[in-house]
Length: 201
Picture (cartoon, rainbow, N blue to C red):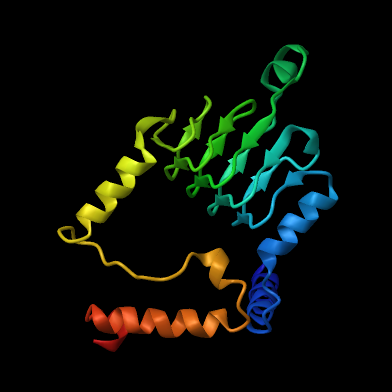
């Protein structure tokens, strides 16, 4: 893509954002449903790559979040390309309330359990149980979601991270002025934690 078209694309998406037509996520979900995919309510897909020719092989239940850059594969044609063997398909099921982190790879034939968390850049080759956290390549059991949350809340008082108290994105998105609210909340968060950008120093 040359510089001119990159510039046009940037301006186009900025305009969409400003006029609040950035239900980019909603449009993605609607497009997939129109193609026959079974996708529940309150689903957030952030630039997720899905094989759109095979809607029969994917089901995403309600309240699922799939973060930036994740790819969901529904078929394996490696041996078909090498030897002319049959193409293998596998149904992928992502159950209610699951969270899949950035840049994961979900292989054909797996299910991700209810309220499960898949860590960023994980390679999911086997089923993920309900209420568990898996990480790695290939993804392996790390701990239960309850244990993970307890650890997270315990570490808040003693680690070097900053914590921003804000509603989940999908709840914020439902309000018309969510962008203004988010911006003012973020500025309060910076002020409360005495965080300044390099530009303002």
